[in-house]
Length: 409
Ligand code: SF4
Image (cartoon, rainbow, N blue to C red):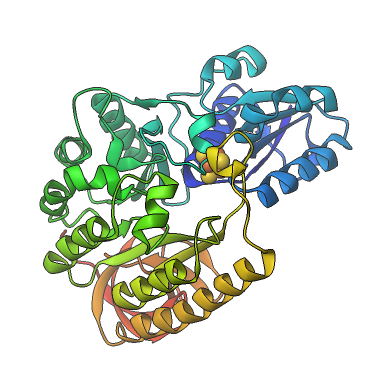
């Protein structure tokens, strides 16, 4: 019996889809390369913006053409369950492990999927925020953190299975533990102490609002070389009034305090942030403040999303800005950041670092240096660490050469 899997969405949703796929493989299913050679199809879905949702619905229609049982897991199933059923698919809402068991007959929650040298491990579901535009909050209601000992055990199993990069994921990793009287720094300490092997941890996205509570402690925990000096801290806007309208629960100076705190101790930190352009209340001056913030902070990675109203959210009731204005703001910011990214990567040329090879890439293999920057190498074994010198750069990738095997951690 063969299973065809396709998955979209954030790291967390992809990890959850892989957990289900691995549980099916453990139960005797084999993975098919194409939908036509499969007996059932599993589709992991996302609805973060309107465009994505439309794409997901289109994909459901296309896959239904193969006349195989189609299991639609994730966020589309959470918001459009009834419509999916009417179309002839089986919806399984995000994080509904009971429904996975009912429909597919497997226990998936405790699976630890390893792909190449990477294991993505969800540490919590949902978030504790109240953002006015976010559909995820409606899908993954409340916050449910996994027990620390369960996560430590999953990391141990992943490392034993060959994973060397552990991605700890959640909708907001900084809110980890708020529902069980613990926090992210304590979890990271437990992982690092409980699993003493050589590996690296990528801590996923954290909201500035919750990160404010724990960032000083996190800066201390980062000292262990096994945590990538990488911070994904979505600011969303450089204007305090827009942040207030978005109900983000922090100010621009809170965001800066966290970034500066990390950069003071780790000047080479890789900073990734997200911006929503064209929020309905964003006027020209608000947008200019976002531009100024990007110029000041110079993030290594900037994810730009055009505002998209999601049904059921308070922001969906606001009058949207003209499409042309939003498009233009998005273009301006994209161009601005392209230059910044190039300069920041150029500054890395000549540096020597220890990099972990994680996957094949065009022209060789993809490695990650200790700050999670992508480094393309001509060759290397997946899952091995190397000393690497940076010899070239592009807007996204660095290029490097191996100078020798990596020494002790
Ligand atoms: S949680 Fe949000 S980003 Fe992740 S798959 Fe669901 S809608 Fe997409």
